Image 1 (cartoon, helix red, strand yellow):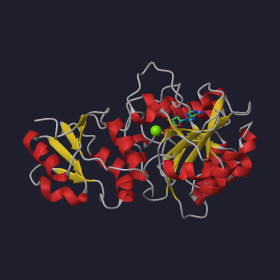
Image 2: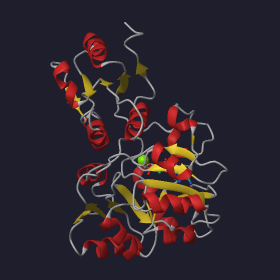
Image 3: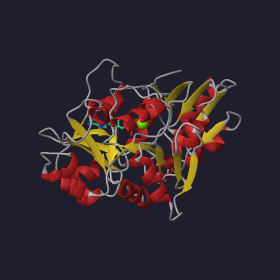
Image 4: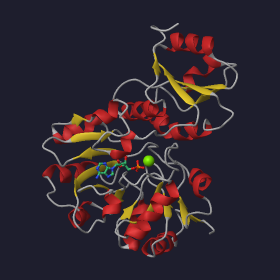
Length: 344
Ligand code: AMP
Ligand code: MG
């Protein structure tokens, strides 16, 4: 099949893409977080194509993308007031809420869970496509499973050219990491995945938040977890990734001492001069964490190359969006973190 490239700013795009979705096809959609691989979320056959194209494990549920809070009751029941408060504060935007699913949502979309992840994306063209399709769009990140997420249309074509019906090219994604996921089905709201909406912002609206252990630690592949996606090897280039913590100078001294030809250094732009001769790649400015989240997956994709033997990575400190960058990078590194103060 030929994969059509539909420009986001063409007035025909919502109609064309909406029609493909309505007819059970696959369209990669731009969002502020990452590109999603979208299909009719109410059509089990269409949803099955997403799993097939990505090589996604069947127990990993998809997020339903909707046009706004007014659609929440169509697909969810027992919706707590906090869900509407969050939607009011952060939608359209990079926040997914997990709520009890109605029978209208097929089991393959929720991976058999009684709950569904739901979000309203901050991309006008994508909301227009959902409206034209007349159905919610189920969409996980458009990467092949396990690989770094797709933040440009070129990334999507790299993974799926000729295997999906279309990609809507909306340029590079603004946030660059996947949505924040908060579970609202228990007594206390639970953060399942950090993202562009920060824990601090959630707390301000909800007044309470538990951080799930899957956010901060490696989860065993056989474990029963709240967010099934969190237990898989994720976001990773094919080689080993090692995070080197500590001060700029101590980390650089450690990395320079251990660097071997074929290794790469993934660092902040401010650090580039420290790694001359070590093949450094910067993913953004430490002083502006939004550039790090926007640049992370492109950099990890560049490092996903058989010629790269090992990656030494620098990770930002602190809360806010840095917390989401830390989460993705730690998962890419399978939580291998070296403290140069403790190691020779
Ligand atoms: P992706 O968009 O590729 O990052 O995948 C969607 C993520 O949302 C996965 O990590 C899922 O585990 C998570 N997710 C979707 N629906 C649910 C749900 N009902 N409960 C918990 N997590 C969910
Ligand atoms: Mg994903």
